[in-house]
Length: 347
Ligand SMILES: NC(=O)c1ccc[n+]([C@@H]2O[C@H](COP(=O)([O-])OP(=O)(O)OC[C@H]3O[C@@H](n4cnc5c(N)ncnc54)[C@H](O)[C@@H]3O)[C@@H](O)[C@H]2O)c1
Image (cartoon, rainbow, N blue to C red; front, side):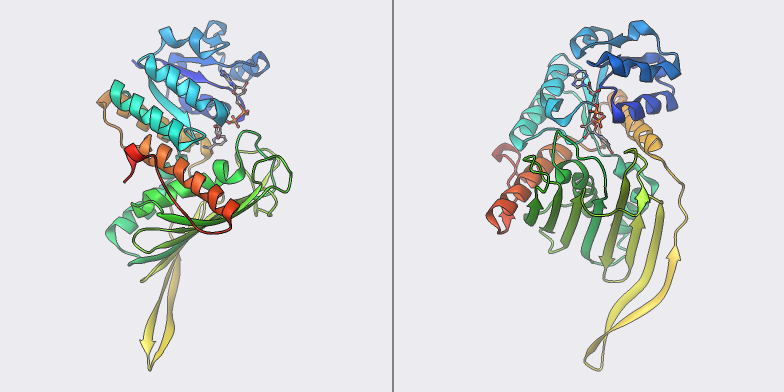
């Protein structure tokens, strides 16, 4: 029976705590949280006081796996310590602040034979699973364009900028859905709040197959819905995938998926739009705690089988960190930037 140490019980750590209980692992859970004022969040589960600890080190000997839900700036050190102690690790996104740090974690995980999974729960939403199947089966035809908005009025995170914390969800989802990562990017970022972190970002992505992508993230643009993770925020989390045969529109916040039977045909020398019916595809709802529960269950399966199919240290760690670095480089230079993963891990 796998014993778990969750590190961090802040805003999102509470979702992890709920998710561990949802998959019946609450009685095998320890929590390390540095700020003891946060410990009260465990009270609603009648969480035993002797399983609440002040730091990772205090719990490492008692558990088999570690679940890291602390600010992104602390991920590298905490993951490194846990992996070197022989633990399998689940870490919330982004895995590390830099691609170099990511490459080091990937090397340690490989050398020690440990599972290292990154928290990208949009991959586990039924909408994403449906999209993955449809794209694999080629039912939208050749993909031409994929675009997403992950934005809205909300508090500005203090550990990383908005593309690095919000936009990165869709950067990962697009790579996973398309089965490839962007080769280059052209991006514009702005720091209106003068914090040294972007609060607005648009990135145009070019994939090796020729597909064009665009991700927009920001705190200064309006969102359409009440955010289900950040209290008091208004948010939009939507994507559109344009194929040769059909187009799909998704709104994750209200969990709708619409497929438009629309394509173009050359008629008498003119490309005419042939627009058929649009259809809503009914899928099971899945709230953020259920999404976390699904990815944690997948992590436990990987721990048991010693084989991971979830977001891993290279595709969801190093590669995404290199993409974020290229986005910042492009925004600084005003021109496109190539995405360069550290040499040992280049595609
Ligand atoms: N998947 C998602 O949609 C999603 C949503 C929100 C946050 N996140 C990720 O979750 C992580 C945490 O975000 P959050 O919003 O909960 O942050 P938060 O600041 O609300 O909480 C972090 C907690 O970690 C504790 N902490 C910091 N360093 C620690 C250490 N070394 N040992 C023990 N405790 C420590 C802090 O005291 C705090 O309570 C971030 O990486 C973020 O990107 C993911």
